[in-house]
Image (tube, rainbow, N blue to C red; front, side, top):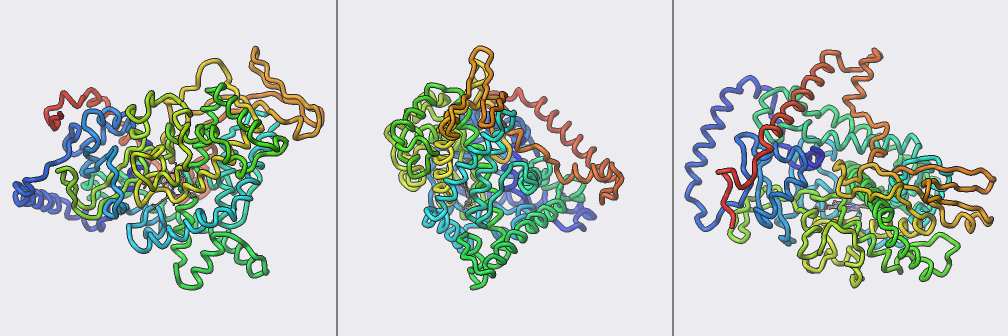
Amino acid sequence: MSLLSTLSSFSELPHLPDNVTKHAGWYIAGAAATLVAWRALTSGKDKDTKDLPHPPTRPILGNVHLLAGSPLTCFDTWGPKLGPIYQFYMGSLRWIIVKYVPWRGANYSSRASGELRYIVTHGYKDIATARYGDDWRKRRRYFMDATVRKLGMYQANIDAEAEHLVKGLRATKGVPVNPGDYMMLYTYNVIMGIMFDLRFDEPSDPWIREEVKLQEQFFQLTSFSTNLSNYFPFLRLFPQKWVGCRTQDGHEWRAKFDERMEIMFEKLRKRIVDGENVQSFCAELLEREKAGDIDHYELLGMCTSIIGAGVDTTANTLNWWILSMANHPDIQAKVYEEICTLYDNIDTCPKYEDARKLPYLDSTIREAVRLYPAGPLGVPHVSLEDDVYEGYRIPGGTTIIFNSWAMNRDPRKYPNPSVYNPDRYANVTSPSSTLMNGKFEDRDHTSFGFGRRACPGTHLAESELTTATAALLWAFEFVRKDDALIDTEKYRLGLTLAPLPYKFKLKERRSEVLQGKALSNVFDPVDGKTTVVFEDGTTAEGDLVIGCDAMRTNDRSPRTEKRLKAAKGNGGERKPVGAIMDYVREYITWVALRFMRRSWNNDTIDSDPDTVPLD
Ligand code: HEM
């Protein structure tokens, strides 16, 4: 379900006017007649081309019922049988999924339309959902100017944030916390530093909690079950509120996000007016707005993309890397040894300039990015024009998913693909940001996307990951809570791919040196407890818990908020009958999806007569 949520945001259809509902019968009859006529007119055409293979489909549903469970597993099953390129149906929509198809040209570089996406981006005036064209190119160029050409200008910030990350975790004094919150604070602060020259101290800061909530709401707003009419257009014949289309929530989300951004911009303007020379990306954007190069909505849209794409992705990659270190003490020890031998100034927290010279550390990061891509199915692309690929017809406007998950785990390229083995990158020296622009076969992995839409934040992500991992490992040892390996093949697929909550201990390595005193931190492998002695003589012990649950703390969807307000009787706008309808709709959706899965989950590709024969 969660993946579908992500994917669904790329396939919404335009809204039909309300009066459609009055003439539903005529519309259905008209649509059926058009379909028959179209079939008659087009049959026999394109004799030289063929349709792509596809898994068995059900009338109306297509393949939605199979994907609703675990899409990655579903694609893992279909892929070996259907080959490197095949199609499947999301209700009435045909999507294509590819593996090892190195399309780089403009044709496969656009994005799909969608009503909610239109709302939350002020009409695609951002980077990530913008259609291919001059406006997208311009915004992407401005962004990359800051994060590639001028990255050096922000590096001191990133170094300082990595040190804050270490200090923040040390300051918890062994009280169990969720380090995932600290990773998120780190990546959010890096982005806020670049955009506004601003930072926050604590993950518990109300501004940060609100941010976590907004990101989660954004994800829910574009989720599968709230947008069923994307795939089943006949649902558009009903009032959209009945079928869960949450346009009003989309407007509210946008208003809230804009309000927060305007507060940031106001602070920035004031500092500039006061004569401060603020070096920040948004200060540059304000200049560009003044010069008429961009309008205010583009300004806000770009902020949406950068925060939306740049925080959770890198934070969860760090969570996966920590998990990998905790699972592999031998690998962890080797990285630490590399830090000790190659880094001269071991008494101070390493900075990027030193960390980037540690090849084994670099391999451990690449391996985590390969095995756990933040967006395992990337962001769907859309083709602009009709095309024929190896004899297959690919109509313009088709949604195309690049299956990074499968590509990164192909045993032909990565022997024992699910094993965390940094040595596979022993001879790779070029950064991913360089390799992704070279030959497809030479890439270290495909986690940063494809062609012209490939991630423009790759350089920044590389710098953030290198700086933070070196600082963390310099300061702490990650120790598994018990002997059993933490299961890395289970995950939560929400906004990005996140590990399930897992427990480990942070054993401080350098407290003595950092504090200038012979303080101790002792990990007892027998009872599994770590005791840290602090400067003031106090001691503490405890587990540190990491996991995606942190991303959900305090989370409440707009709908839940309204319900709570209504329940408290404090005048929430939603009337009780509206709340009941919400429950009923959610329940029906839930039952329907469970029913569909139970009824058809015995389907196999081979047993279905509709399946296109495979060689
Ligand atoms: C480990 C970290 C990251 C990973 C794995 C990652 C991955 C991706 C992927 C797979 C895409 C879609 C590419 C495609 O459509 O083919 C993407 C797009 C994007 N990413 Fe990243 N990303 C990361 C970090 C960042 C950061 C730090 C930023 C910015 C601060 C960022 C900004 C963007 C933007 C703006 C897009 C949309 C590009 C477009 O549509 O033209 N990403 N990213």
